[in-house]
Length: 152
Image (cartoon, rainbow, N blue to C red; front, side, top):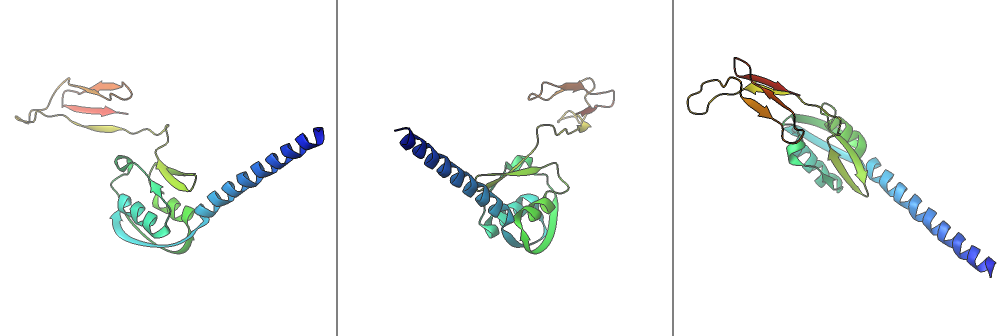
């Protein structure tokens, strides 16, 4: 009776290993998929949409995270991961494969500095000692005597 239980366990283990290896190979295959991709002076957002359409691979991202930069790229039979590397090269964005879908994201440790001058909308008068608050992080700052602020 023990032999029957061990045989069933071995079959389950073998099935688990085969499925696991198959998923890993499928994921690797998605990123190694050769893509010919050409885009000239288009937004990064447009480039990602076109890359998704041309490669047949779902590329997911939040539009608000995509910086407003223009990209140009011309690659022939290049693995998808190399195309993504080049498109995202000068941005803080990264990507990862989840199943067969590529997800573009902003790493948690990324910092930005925003700065500017606050002015009254009607009068155009600069606002001195006005509070600027990032609700998400709870960080804030105050404008100086010129209405200028800087917040990291």
